[in-house]
Image (cartoon, rainbow, N blue to C red; front, side):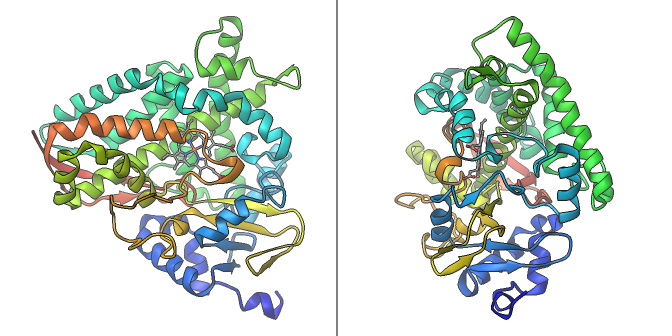
Amino acid sequence: MSNETQDLAAPAEMAARLVNPASFGDPATLHADLAWLRGHQPVSLVDTAGVDPFWLVSRHGDIMDIERQPDIFRNGDLSTVLIGSPMLKAVENATGCPHLTRNMVNMDGAEHRAYRSLVQSWFMPGNVKKLTDDIREIARAHVDRMMGLSGECDFVADVALHYPLHVIMSILGVPEEDEQRMLMLTQQLFGARDPELSRKADAMADPDTAIKVFGAVVADFHAYFSNITANRRAEPRDDLATIIANAMIDGKPIDERAANDFYILVATAGHDTTSASTAGAIWALAERPALLAEVKANPDLIPALVDEAIRWVTPVKHFMRAVARDHEVNGHHYKAGDWVMLSYMSANRDEAVFDDPFEFRLDRPANKQIAFGYGPHLCVGQHLARLEMKTLFEELLPRIESLEIAGEPAWTQATLVSGPKRLPIRFTQS
Ligand code: HEM
């Protein structure tokens, strides 16, 4: 490390916390770290045990400027998620690339555009709107179920986990009886280091064990989706699975692995994130009776509630980029080969962009949250996620009178996707 670089290093204790999945169980401490970095070292070198060194970019504006330059800050060349360097090598040995699965998230340029365009129009607001009635029916069924729980429940386990799961699985054409399996596999992938969710959390620090566990989870997904691919090729239907199974790139059908990795992306990205934001909104309302009364009295505030909950939780904590050539952004010199973390978790509390960023407020004139990222990889499912959340609150809020926290909530211990893992609440019905 040069002296100049050393000056930009994040303090050692902070660096260790920022890469430790367990720290994400205590977001307040991490938020304090990130606020310090935004104020003192907005682009900070994190050089700590277990991971290759990387630049942590903590300010909203810097992240947007980086995402505007996808030819320089690339997704395909290094891991797009923070994994330890021994694990990265194990992944490379197993898959021949730095990614456990290869999907549009870790593609660049023309290849990324080709894969994204296969489903982009399907996810546009005009098309997603057609699902409104189906989504409302699913939302109502989940609210009915909650109302049957005699005024107390774990909102995560009883409502938030299942509702977006059911929506995305019906969109993908996965039968209801297989949803639990999909949920378990997703949690084993995203919560691999969380003792309550992982197949083997205690052994995941060992890269050989970790790659076997991840490999087994991915193989389970593949085995499942191979059947769906075969089925939709033989009997096409009007669903997203049929679009993926029969997708063509450059005039040729995509191969089975590409199709399977595509399903895995949609099946995993499409529910945990939305569940986390939904639970975050209920948590915020349970702690703020006046806000609950305000939204109940004025349902036009629901879209603002949705966007603020997404900002508040920011379920996807980061994505990584690899620097293709030496380049300067806002005074920081990146070198070819550098690994860069875009910390959405930090950006969404950036005091330069949000008044009172640590307040949950519905009066943000235009909520500039970037929980869905920005630029060419901007979340393709954002309109669906917003519609799902809005519909659930439209159904739920008129039916509850009061809400309160009724036990110790907990957060998922994961560096990539983390949100409320347990949310005991007490409620009375209207
Ligand atoms: C990409 C967040 C819901 C599918 C992303 C990215 C983020 C994100 C941060 C990467 C953006 C970037 O690199 O700039 C979220 C959040 C959600 C959510 C916070 C819920 C609140 C969904 C849903 C789907 C979905 C419901 C539906 C299937 C995808 C896909 C990509 C993506 C396919 C890859 C886009 C690309 O690489 O071009 N999402 N997402 N997401 N998301 Fe979401």
